[in-house]
Length: 57
Image (cartoon, rainbow, N blue to C red):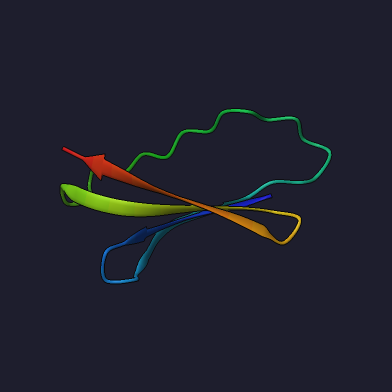
C-alpha cells in the first residue's frame, strides 16, 4: 500500500509506503508546516487508486 499527498499544484508533499504484511489501519502525517488549503490524498492498494480531498486549516 502506498499513500501520497499532493498540493493543488500537483507537488507531492508527503509519501509513505507500507509492506503488504503490515495490518496498519491508521497513519499520521504531520503537515503542520504546510500552508492551509486543499490537499489531495491518493491511497494505492494493488494498483487501485482511491482519491480523497482534505482541507487543512
